[in-house]
Length: 178
Image (cartoon, rainbow, N blue to C red; front, side, top):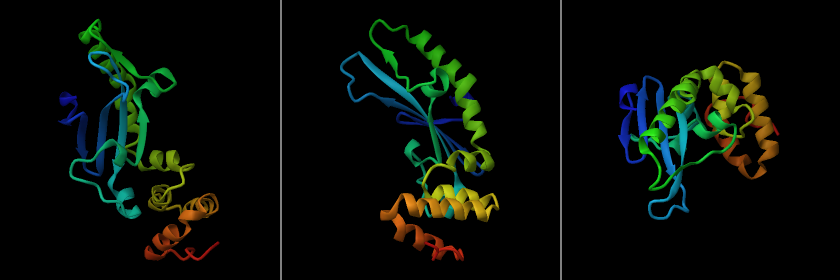
């Protein structure tokens, strides 16, 4: 990871970019016992502009769950949620090579793809969040942002006041809609 510009912080590897962060996190299974265990590799990209427009604060050492978009490496590689297994019989060198190859073939390309605002906005389209609306606004697509806003207000009535307050604070003319 170091050769790709990442710095380690606990089980998280961070790479600061001009406009955000790339994050790789090793998540241990809660059922791990002794030398036997499982782990997943979580990927995340933080886009500073989306976070700022959404009103989110990014810590100096962000966590994967702070990400604008997230994915599991196992899903990219195996097409399903996949947890690597480790035991005292595991050849650590083989396991490290497997993860390294998975990062090279799937992980790093995914991180690079979602460094692009258009790809992030597209991925967030079906996600009911301030970040989804913010991404559409940053793309200059106010009609799409409003459509996302309207859908969120219908899907998440409990969050209506929060979303309306956010839209009003941004000076969006359609905050009173619905």
